[in-house]
Length: 192
Length: 371
Image (cartoon, rainbow over all chains, first blue to last red; front, side, top):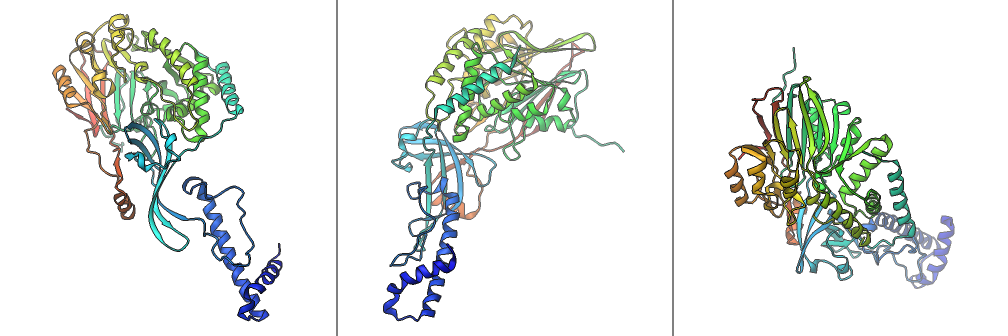
């Protein structure tokens, strides 16, 4: 859709909204342009957040079908990020559960931010969300990060996120692919 | 003007055998570099520098100016543990003339199926690092058409003759036939109970399948214990070797203590029947949540020898150094994080295989020291 059409669309819908404010037509256009600029910034912010969503933002907050852009309705919403929390990553790890004892577990953490040496961490089962607890097993993989959480109203808070690797539904083709690879290896490898 | 080599950079002489143990401080694995003599190099296991991700065996060979491409004749994978296999595929890719040896399996097809199924988990980042490395090694071997040697009791894996008269051999001592048989059953259950795609495979007691090695170096003998443990069943582990090995013809003057000096790796009969009195002994520590060797085990080893070497000392686990912001947040959340420290240590032993009364020359580098 062309920008001028967008302005017309917004203008017509905003007429009603702004009718009580007695704006002139020119002022109305200016307002619409300002709104578009805010919307464009909102889109840019959403897109950058979508790039990092896989790991650090709850999948329940974002869906594949979520449209990138919504025309503003009668009550204009300037903040596109209103239902996303922006998480500024300070440190992230991939963890692997190596021991479970009672309601505590130990994990090996691989530093994803700085690399280098690994760490051993002890967690309580209470650190794990209820949704993820069934995934907590010896050998399970999880993503763990800590940082600052910036909410839509500007509040900054310290936050940690632990997300266990979600179940990947295996297709028959996955098994076939692996077994075929094994067959090929068996045929091509030479054993003494 | 010639280049002066440091002690570490000096390669062995043609008639010198070498057994070099490389440790990483107890958290990133161990590897062994063996020179049979006459530029016949064998690498046993692999570990990496966590910062450079480079295999330490390659680093060492490069430091003594060895032609890795042509002079590494064999790469041995002693068992399926991350800390013994990290970086192995990189070594294999560079050592173009090297053969490859692993513990024997009866049902190779099933074993390969397990490897490939676990490799599929790569997408979920839950694959064992060992499976990824092993899979990469398989692909290299497939392309090259290199034969895979299978280790078991009394299997000759490598040999050469030095100065036309002195024979040097590398012989595997394990796994036993019984262990191989049991592993075949275990593979079946690992495949059956394959678990969720986001879960790592956890093989049971991979140490029982470890490949221990016996070296004949002219008149001298050495045993490299890998991570082989004692077992309740005399058909497995060290009991099987002590009772049934036909290749061990003499006691050894050098011993690489198995499994970080743990109680599970200690068998008094090894010291009484397989080793000289007061042999040179070396080990790598384990320095994560638990520490090995335990003080009482260290004491036990010192009762058997006063020539005990370790690749690095224990270090108290501390939090990793980070910027102030992150450190503050970690503290605010009361997170219990301990860094797994990296400390490279090398214990190098060389002996002239052409001289029957030669003694081992022992050198320690970086963190390694004599206890």
